[in-house]
Image (cartoon, rainbow, N blue to C red; front, side, top):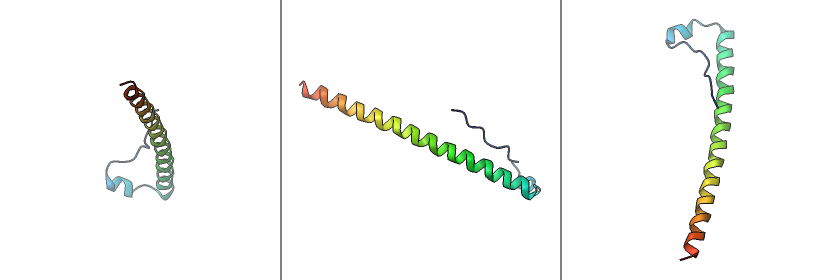
Length: 66
């Protein structure tokens, strides 16, 4: 999944020149991006947990044949 960060001026002085509406839009875009990133992190954690559980079961079964 690709995430495109909002276009934010790199220089603080340029940010200070933005209108209140432009700043509000940037904050809103960043909040949406953060929410998507949190969802993606949780999805990836779920995949890692499943992989870990499968790996643990595999090792338990292998050890039971010894």
